[in-house]
Length: 227
Image (cartoon, rainbow, N blue to C red; front, side, top):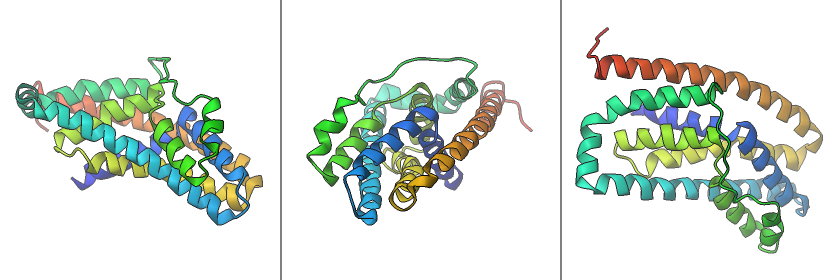
């Protein structure tokens, strides 16, 4: 259980530092903070924005996991075959993380005009941006959330805890950038470049580990191979 929770936290961090969500998060926090003179309020705005993202992921987790497990036939199927299903899912997510397969889509919620619409709400606007931007899935974040995180939630019958930990993971880099923006905006470029390089290698390593884990699940639960 502890390993699964740490995996959910890492999936959240990896989601947040992936190129598309990372750019969106920095843009959102920068927009929120540019009209706030107090650095501490900028950090608070980053925390509120993160809270909005967490709320979205928890709500999605509750709806999807509860919906799947509330249908007896599906719940019974998942109970018996979730470990078999996890193998191909992990391999597919790993392939997407390695960009062997490239998928182009966007939920389209994070439009540029949205910033101006929530501007009048002040710090509460940060909460709204967090809620909406969390739903703007790019291929990598969609694979990590729907493919891996929800699979963990279903396997452990947890509709709140795993999405909550995942949401916290997505918020850690956001809070970091909020602090940088608030107290040392000149360091933002260096921090961004360093994080992009870190994300590239961590995504590759995670993708390889996912594929290996998927092969292991298939070998042990499909072919009954034991080590």
